[in-house]
Length: 266
Image 1 (cartoon, helix red, strand yellow):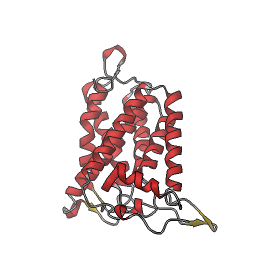
Image 2 (cartoon, rainbow, N blue to C red):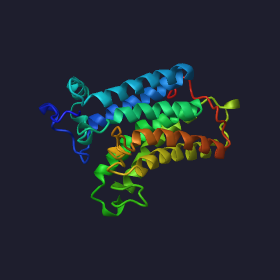
Image 3 (cartoon, rainbow, N blue to C red):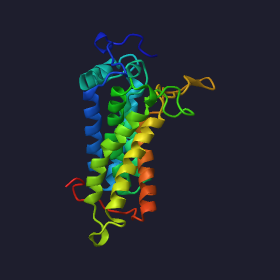
Image 4 (cartoon, one colour):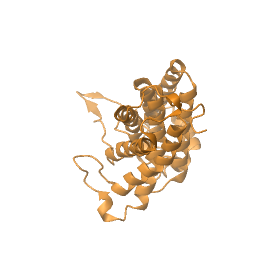
């Protein structure tokens, strides 16, 4: 049985319309950390490690509202503070589970460099698109109120463009320092510019495509209760970005096994 009463100190979750800088910095920091970790740790160790972390987080999500496990909510509040959103305190899974699951699946599905870049788009595009979206929500023409065929509901074009542009410097720097065969980038600087921008647009588009509020599973399927899962951008963004990276590399004639710089950024 779910707990009916959430502790008082957890009763003030943030509104989605707030620009929560602390949450965005934490989001970006974790993403860049995981992208760097994935770059330096062998795949054979990274994926099992992330699988354990994801499984432990899933267990916490399933247990934290059961009787006797309220201390898990206390611990979450201690770590995240007012960064927790209303729906996360009403029984929906927190973004952490989808974040770790998205990173794990991206590392599993794509070549090393594409996966690292996909995870980096999650780190940068997601919070920056949200930031620009919040600050431009009063610009009417930018808003996609009802969604375009379900895409972008309650989000904005300017948020998408801001997220894409914010990713550009990181992508350009990382790809510039990659270990190119013969020291020459196929297509030269023009290809580098195209890839850097296209990657950012892929990450920002994936964030834009996930509607607000999120699509959720019904409470029961065929009479059986199911976990409160929903479509989350933390899961969608890195996977779509990793896939887009492989396509961008292919169109530009770049090798999928391109090795990034030893320390990625320097």
